Length: 301
Image (tube, rainbow, N blue to C red):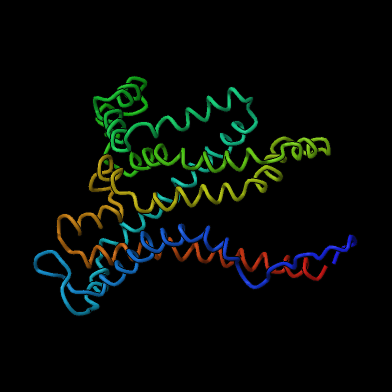
């Protein structure tokens, strides 16, 4: 009962309401049908034997798990991890200042910059990769320019090495990093940086100590949307990487389309899924533990 004599509605502490469940239901069904069930099927196929005709045999076996001890896999897994980590780091390094200046730009410039970020999505992903193959080709524009200024030798190949894969991956995933950071920066109160400057903070201190913590959720989202697809990259290393730049996605495709070994491909996919899921679960668990004392303090206050 409040001061006006009206009865206040008590907060519901017994879980989500029926309306909240109805709103969540489409997303839950989408995740259940298109993500959880296919993932469980992939894990199940890992423990099935190989069919002589390229399918999945009857019964259960651990032979696929033993075959994952291939001596060539550690080098491929290491290359996949470092290429994905460096791609994510470079994308965040470029996307953070870009998102900062886009959010601070005037309305006209902001729309123009946002359009420039989105324009690559108007063309096919495959065409963009082939465009880079043309540019990095021995007769391509970039190779000729670098050779003309004597930055590289005439016989140096810019294609079919991990650095070509890294360059194209950064180009391909950079817009995915810019957009969530820009979305977070657009909601950031830049008066906080001006207040910090008035109190004696330098410009880089305002950026590092005020802006970056304020857009940390956007940065975390950018890390996830770049790192996860980078781990599963297949087309980029296949077109511009060659045999010396194979990633785990290429091995999965090879086991499916060439070797016709679906259990082995499922085993590699299961390992890739665990490599993505376990760090994310650890981060969520640590965030929950960090937020729990704050909640207790608020309730006691």
